[in-house]
Length: 164
Ligand SMILES: [Cu+2]
Image 1: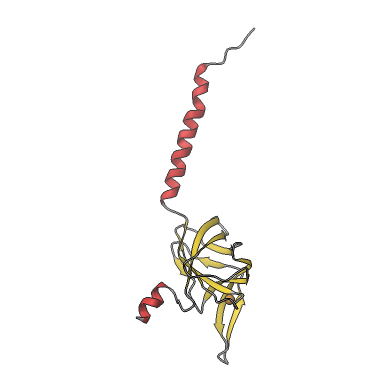
Image 2: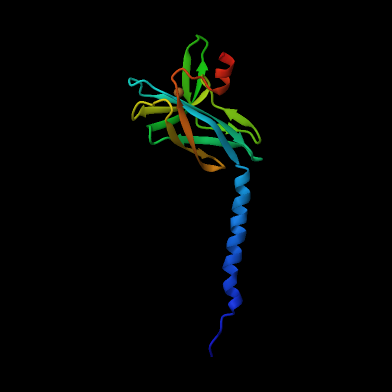
């Protein structure tokens, strides 16, 4: 005895695909983690390291932490640093394991504080070029962004306005 498959079943995959597409579209409107104002300090030929800065906005209800940054096009070795001044006025840079952003808060990496350190640079970082960055977050996972290379004297968007 032969079984005949009802034609109605063939329509199901189309319906499932449609609702999946809608769900994805909704998620794109509010990013869980938003990265803005990413920049890296330009270098002169003798420099083998540089620092990078960006602003992280956590739009979720949970604490999230930046765990690592990679920028393979410019550097083999990247880590998260914090700058501190000790009791003798000496400036130190310490490696930190993570940068955490409380729910619905913004954390900015700015000169002389927390930053991304790019070591063993492959070549000179020239003004105006863009560098792709891959950020790894504890909850949000992998986030791709681009950082603009600024001049060696640049101190960031807000600082530059205050200087004028
Ligand atoms: Cu550093």
